[in-house]
Length: 531
Image (cartoon, rainbow, N blue to C red):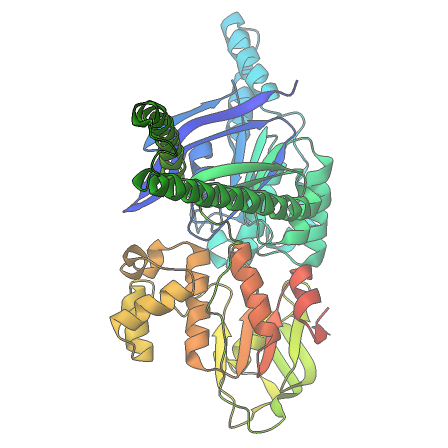
């Protein structure tokens, strides 16, 4: 029997007026690798923070195995010293402190008391996997952070910092990995390497990710967080999709059976009640015998009526809702028309950062109807190209031409364009001249209904919720050229599928950066490779 690592019972957690969990229970055993999925804002990140001990539940209990070691990768890295080198950050672990203390004591091992203390530290060091840690070189090169080791953490890009944080998590000898969007800053080679590494390890894991192929390759179970409860499925993400469809069909059959039973009971009640009101007279003159027989029949009919009423009341107290596959409506783009076939033209474009060339003699064109995906390793200039088109930076050499009818809509990877201190209501009223009522309507259509969401500053929303807000902003902007930088990152699967469907019918032009193979296969009419 597998070792039980962590067990949660009856977890409850509120965020403002929103109830995230309602008596949620969950167990994780050694060797289990879960994909954790659910709508944006449903509490996935909060749940793994509770498992790590970073957030306390309002109610419920979390019990961990003795000496359980949990390694956690957050969506964004805040807990670092800007003046610390990447090398020091990687090596600054509890094991490093144990090594320092052991090295200090090794000077006086001839003292029995010191030897006893050293032996205790050494046993702790070994139990924590100190002698079986993954060598730093095994993660540096696949994650392409070897050249950043001597740089200060504050001078690195957000993507570089997150890859260093991932390297640190993978180097640790842990019993349970909690990974929140681990592929967001990885290119194809890095994602494939991570898939292989996770599948070869016996470490248990709970992984939040938008990448469907990655989840299929890396996980052997799936947890769906919905309406405050968690449902466990065996197998991969593809297996989950089939099982969920089967479950919806079973629920639909049960819903229809209940409706038929309710309809039948009501018809029987109506028939019996009507027959009681219109009794027929006796066929002979024996009224006494008729009354005796009739009285018994009426009592029997009344008992039947009462039984039917009881059954109907039981059904109506436990009415089933008609099951529906969750979808996100409202991602229906209606862009301003492009006046010409061509939208963008790149003619021998060059761009460098300091002495480091990023784009070298790049040439290409974006035409109406194109859905071009740019791919390439990290640092190859993909985001730089989008920023140049959006007018956020100047190219060094060459020409970048936009047709006069082009209206740009930019979904950047970090959703930097949203004013973090503003609420959704303030933002949409200010930028699109909508009334508060119209804002509520549009947010409801996009799947972000609720006064709580509307009145909360963007900085209090999850990355997925912010991204959905930005998608709604693109819809309202009437942009005819969409620039999408890793658009699938942090989106729940319902929103992601709705976005893919909307992009396939988009009547403008699309230039996107993505490492999501499923997204590329569905959307791209062309691929530009910047390798």
